[in-house]
Length: 239
Ligand SMILES: Nc1ncnc2c1ncn2[C@@H]1O[C@H](COP(=O)(O)OP(=O)(O)OP(=O)(O)O)[C@@H](O)[C@H]1O
Image 1 (cartoon, rainbow, N blue to C red):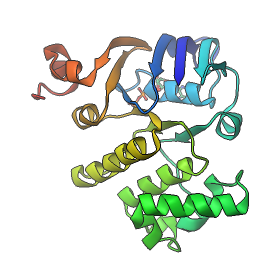
Image 2: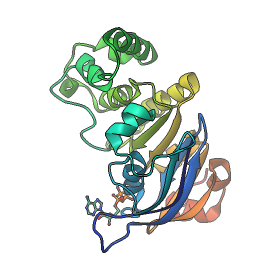
Image 3: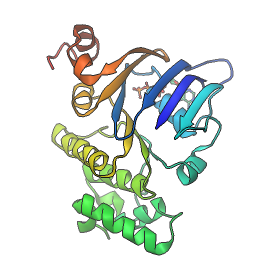
């Protein structure tokens, strides 16, 4: 589905933030990127999305080399959805208008059909369809951001900290929304998360980054029982 090989990337010519990262996400898998602040998780998502282009290495989407393709073209032509960490909805637009923005490449009738489908999947959006995004709760906004990215029916969704700023209960609702779209539409999901334990419980595999490289990877079942992982990334909590 997506494979990245030996990616090197950075914001200035002198400094590499990503120092040769490789990973893959299979169809309908949920894969989480974990690691300490500043290790490069968001930079990696941005590089896969094409917000930042890699200096070297390859980003292969559905078998095609898309390493140098910018984000707007990946969204339009390569079935990619990207939900950044901040500013992921238009606060002054309604729920309907936000979803229409997500579906702006679709013909109007297809856009309406997709909106109806997503309102069936996430009924809260249907109930608040004419409400301004600014008036939604944090969890509802996050679900709207998800739905906006899902409008073109992407096969790969990149999520940057979908639980940021949410209470534990709301976090569970947002994670349930992510699992639901994976199950119903077989979307592949790569997400960055700070809530390591909760994210691992809902993911199939994880990559733990350290200073721009992959320090550890494996199934979450295996990682959750690794004492070193629990100590370093989950405050020593038991799985
Ligand atoms: N736009 C930018 N310009 C220059 N440097 C940046 C920019 N964005 C991030 N960085 C730097 O890149 C490094 C990695 O940042 P990144 O946001 O990818 O880390 P992260 O693992 O996602 O961190 P966090 O968990 O705190 O969100 C940091 O040293 C950061 O200061």
